[in-house]
Structures are given as structure tokens and as C-alpha cells.
Length: 245
Image (cartoon, rainbow, N blue to C red):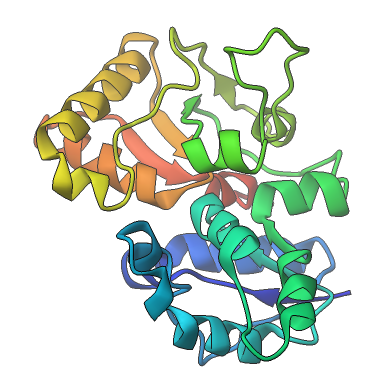
């Protein structure tokens, strides 16, 4: 198979190490990966702010960059969900629908498509998982705690294969961190309080690292940790799965 690597703009600008880890991990698992160099923002910030009608050029560029791949994979649940739900082409709806069906967040690609059951990775630390809202309630990467249903977690499925890694149990395992894209700007005080609550949960339960499928959430939590001069660090799940692989 050939995979088009979709690296969201904020990952490219602020967390290139997560993009590199994603590329290396896929290549080490035998996937042929191509990075279209002309890719830019998928248009999610505009759409979330009520300006989806101005995102057609973003859509057109995404269609041009990622047509022809067997799959499109990205280390960002929120951007993947946006593409899955909102990518459209005014002159070729079928083309947009085809691409929407082939876009995967990294964890779901590893579990659902590659069906990885053995990873030779090592990360000897206590890790807490932050379940991003888009990943949890949009892509269904794990079971929501408010549902009376059998639990499952695709991130846990992969992290449990990492040597030396100890997952810490949280008091509120799938609570929002308060980032919410433009929400953290429009409702700064509420956003910060929610983020502080998530950080406190991880610290209280002994986490050395907080990981997630969404770097946007981790960026929010990282800022709070840094301001509090905490020793707890954030790390994208791709960096853990790629560690010493």
C-alpha cells in the first residue's frame, strides 16, 4: 500500500518531532509513505469559527495533494475528523467522498488497517492517556465512560505493547481538557480551569508523561505544566510507539 502522510499545519510548525516519529513508525512497519510537500491547513480553524464557506481553497488543495493514495494518515484526530466530515468538492463530490473514506488517524490506522499486535518499542515511564474529544467522540478511538457498554481503547491496545510503559489510572479518564481550538481564545478562563483539572488528575495519579492522539490538546496541557514548573511532560503517542523500535 502507499500512504499519503498528512501533517497538520500546527504539527509541522510546533511539533515536527511528532511528524518525524509518525513517518519513521510507518516506514518501520513496512508502509510506503509519501509526503506531499504542498500541503497546508485543512481548514478546520476557519470552519470551527463559522467560516466553512471560505475553506474551499483548502479543500481543493487537499484534494489535489492526496488523490491517488490507498490511505491518508495523520497524527491528529481533530484534523482527521474535520476532513472526514467536511471535505467537499464543488465539481466532483464523488472524489471528495472517496478521500474522506480513506483518511485515518494514526492509531486507528495501526489498529484497524495494519492490525498491529506486536511493537518492539520501549518507553520505561508512567504514562497517562488524555482522550481528546474528537478522537473519543468523533473517531470512537475508545469507549465513552458515560455509555453502559463494553470498554475498549485503541490507544491502550497499542501502548500495552510498549516495553516498560506503565499506564496510570485516572479519576476522570475521558474529560475534556478545555482546549477546543478557538474555544480556548473565546473562553480563556474556562479553558484554563478545565486544563488545570486535567493536569491535576494526571499529576495526582503519578504520571511522568501525558500522551494523546491530539497535539492540540497536548499543547494546551503543556502550557499549563510549563507555567506550573511541573516535571510532568507531554509526548505524542507516535513518539512513544516509535521509541527504540
